[in-house]
Amino acid sequence: MFFSKSRPSSISRRQPQPGSTYILLTVYVGPSATFRIRISPDSMEYVVISPLFTSLPHFSSRPHISSDNSPSNMYVLLRITFCINFIYNRNKKVDVQKIRGKLGGVEVGDDQPTRVMAVLNLSPESFFKGSVAVENAVEKAVELEKHSDFLDVGAMSTAPYLETWIPPEKELERFRAVLPEIVKNVKIPVSVDTYRPQVAEYALKEGASIINDVTGGWLYPEMCRVVADHGASVVLMAREREPRRGLEPIDRVLKVLRGSVERFEECGVDPEKIVVDPGIGFPLLPPRDEPYVVRGEYRHGDENWPWWRWDLHVIANLPRLRTLGKPVLIGVSRKSFLRRVAGAESPEEVLPASVAAEAIAVLNGAHVVRTHNPRETRQAVRLAEALKLVDRA
Image (cartoon, rainbow, N blue to C red; front, top):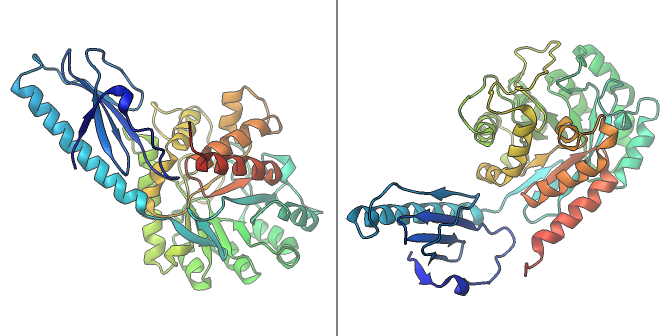
C-alpha cells in the first residue's frame, strides 16, 4: 500500500460501487504541511493543502509539533501512514463481506430489496392507535399484507414510557383469540412480538415463524431454546441490563448485540436466521418481568446522552452494525424521538418524519424496516434504494 501525491484538483472522480466505504481524513503536521487523505476500497491518496488547515467533521488530528522539517514531524506522518493503512485494510475486509440471512423463510440482506415489516397490535394500550385492531384483526392483517413482506403481531405494548404491562396469561389470551386466523389468512410470514418463552412456544406452534424479542433474550434466557427447537427466525434487540458509561451509544449497542447473537448461536439457533435490531426508543432492560415505566431525559444511564440524542446517534452510525455480520432491522415508526425533534405532540403527527427517518436508515444500511404505515414506508425505502445505486455527479 502506498500514498500517491497529487494536486487537489486531480483527485480521482471515479465513483464507488454501491456499498463502498470512503473515509476522508485531514491531518495537520505543521504550518505548511496539512494533508487530506481519502481512502476507498480501491485506492488511497493524499493531497497537500498548504498552508490552509481544513477542519472536517469526520475526523481531524493536530499533533503539537514545533517545526515542519523536524524528525518528530516525519515520525508523526509515518505513524499516521501506518494507522491509515491499518484502517483501510480492516474496512476493506469488512466491506467485501456480504450480509445475508433469512427471516421466516424470506431472504434478507445486501443482495435483496429492503423488506417491510408491518405492525399489527392486539393491545388497546399501544402508543399508536392506528396500529390497533381487536375486533377486525384479520381484516387489518389482510390489508397490511398488500404492502408488506412480514406481519409483526403484538399483544402487549412495550412502549417503555407507558403503563402497558400485562401478565403472560393475558398476553396469551389475546393471541389465542385471533392469531390462528391471522396465520391462516395471510401469505406472508408472521412474526410475534414477545419476549416470553411460553407465548413464543404457542405462537410458533400456531404457524408463526419469527420471534421478535425486544429484550434480546436477556430477560428470559430460555427463549433461545424455544427458537432453536422450532427452527424459527429471531429478531434480537439491543437491550443493556447495566449502563456502560463513557462509551458512545453505537459501541454499547454493538457490545450487547454481540452478546445476544453469541448466546443464541451457542443455543443452536441457525446463524442465518438471526436478525439484529439496534433498539431505537428502548431504554435499559427492566430487572424483572413486571410493571416498569422509564421516563426522564437520561434513559440509558448516561448524562452525556439524552434519550433522543442517543437514538439519532445510533441511526447515523448504523453502518457500524455490519461488523456483526447480521441483517439489520430498524424500527423508528412514529417513535417519540421524532416528536421531540419535529416539535410534534402525538404519534399521529409524525408520519413525514417517520418515513424520512426510515429512508435515512435504509441509506445507512438497514435491511428490514418495521413500520405502522407500510404503504408510505414502501415508497420511502424504494427511493432510498435508488439513491444508493445512482452515480453521483
